[in-house]
Length: 279
Image (tube, rainbow, N blue to C red; front, side, top):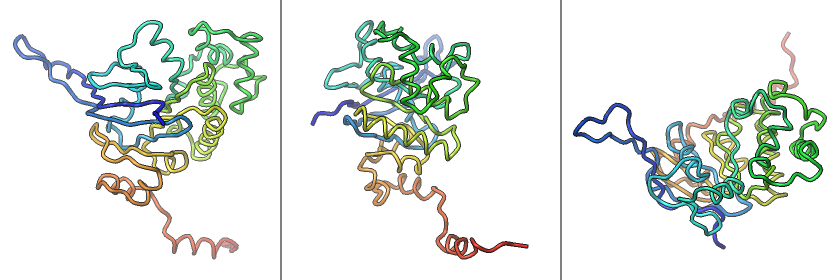
């Protein structure tokens, strides 16, 4: 089966400010170097690594939010690397992004109705029953009270604001959802709720999900496959359980070793003392 989204040898270079002279070209920083991956419909591929590893830049390249220096991105077999104009607008419909900080990605001056239906207006797509009906329906799908359609982002919690961002992304029926650290700014209990929501929506819609994260505990809950990045390169790719249980690369083993674990003897002691009351 051909992949829904495929990146091949992606490279992204950024000029280093202040390094260009009259006779010397500007130096360049390579943020992503020869990165390749495949994402199937209905699967979640997690790109993991420490801050600065290049995973978010890779996600932006795949979503065509920034241009590649070299390499290609294919969506359902079509090369979208250099598309412009109406063709790029169609790609933006099919590949939607949920960002890390929900509040910074939501216009504080707009109501939820206007925020959720913005992609539909931009894409000039019909809204059966009107914008209000569409917004209420999407709010209900992501677990929000549709009666709050006239509220503003500041009137919602962080988890609720992220649900608004997810509803906005779903409005145009994307085939790929890019989640760029979409739960890292949320409390642990809220993270679990958002992850469960994403998994449920994926089962219903069948979209592929490119999930960017540094928290391996979160990744283990949602990923189908995992690609580990460091210094702009992918150093290991595999099925989730293979990567977690039998890591092949030394960097992957270091990442896993850094995950906090409860020592078994501490947990046993906690359970023994759970019914005791200190006076």
